[in-house]
Image (cartoon, rainbow, N blue to C red):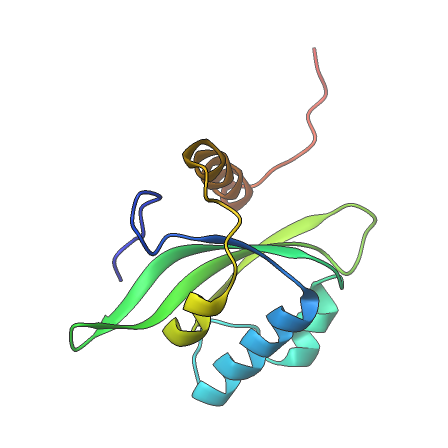
Length: 129
């Protein structure tokens, strides 16, 4: 699966409502894709209702075309006051194109890339010396 660079035309960062994330999950379940939560119930158990951020990250290609976009989802966890989580989900290319982007400015785009990279590596509260 080729990685998507922040300068690629199909790179995108979106802010999604919880209901849209549920729709993406249901679609991934219906298609039998493995990169998703195991069930809608599992998603509800991990993701707090509210806005989530989603960034395209890889393209799954078959026969010369994009079969799915693998995306990172950054969300508030359903348990805990302020904990966050990051997970992946595959999104149908047609649906992906319809999702509104929030990263039109190149500097903002670079900042989102940095945020997602830090989230994937793990973020913890550090005491200052």
